[in-house]
Length: 197
Image (cartoon, rainbow, N blue to C red; front, side):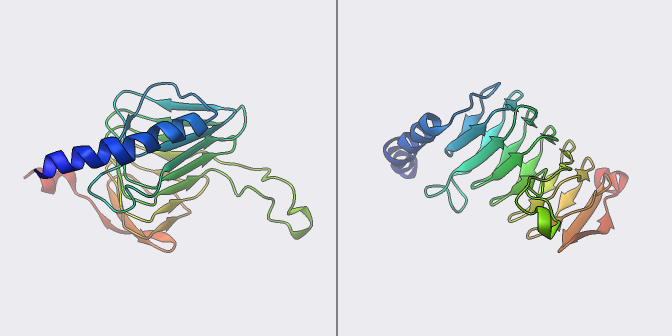
């Protein structure tokens, strides 16, 4: 009965929303993600989904009332997400030239944000001009990111690392690390050998 109820809700409420945001998008992706939640794709660059990428989770908050937003703002911008990665509801990923790459088999919580630019110059007299120095974001394979996390420009998160919920990451995190905080700092190393034993 629960499964039937879910299917009714999905086909009558969520599926029309998915098609609506597909119609509103102005950028066609390379590859086809598995959409549990609507996604709005915008910009002049490239958005690439390699293999099976899952967007949205029906068992998490914001499933029925939000959408994921992906933007490759200019012609040089690339957002690329690799196979096996799942991104929860209400994500916002915006590239303004430098690029954002998310590796294989990553798990990313709800309300995730990643931006490779400050968008505006930080100098008070140049505030109306765009950021002159966007920097690439790289999230390597098998990274686990909690809910309400923001990744800022120039950050690389090493493979197998974990980012705690509510963190703002403004500096790179080495592989096999647990990091959390505002700003995020490494609080523990993950010993792969200990986990396997």
